[in-house]
Amino acid sequence: MDRSKQRDIATSLTILVFLIVGTSGVMMYFHLFDTSVKQMHEVLGLVFVVAALLHVLVHIKSTKQYFTKKIFLGFALVFAGVATAFVLSASGGENPKKAVFDKLFNTPVEKSFALFGDNMQELQAKLSDAGIKTEGFETIGQIAKNNKTSPFHIIAIISK
Image (cartoon, rainbow, N blue to C red; front, side, top):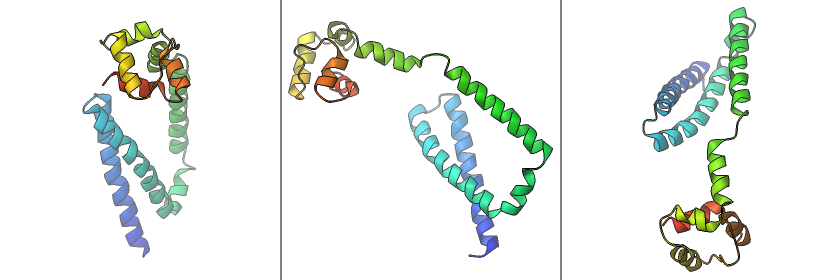
């Protein structure tokens, strides 16, 4: 394939995927169509990384020139600082989803099962019908561990 065709492919792919990933990122920020947009954004984000690398490789001579410019180095420092600040601030506290699930999985089943509206016997029957043993276990976490399954699998069964 000739050099001109490579440049056309690399640039077109990079621009198109950037537009989609950029738009889906904005949609995620405003919580529009959350689940489907998030999945698309994640997959096409990986495609964008490949497209951007391809674009850089095809344009390597002109790309190398940017690395020595003061404006590039300035932006690199700013973005590295912002990214570091995000990472450090995010690691300062516990993930709220993790905290909720940890509490749910380690609370006595009488209390955690109450969240699912059915009585204790009905939920135990659902688990039993699915081949899950509950006798003698005090938490969803213990039930899952002793049945060699995930606590999320236990939740899926009792929430049906």
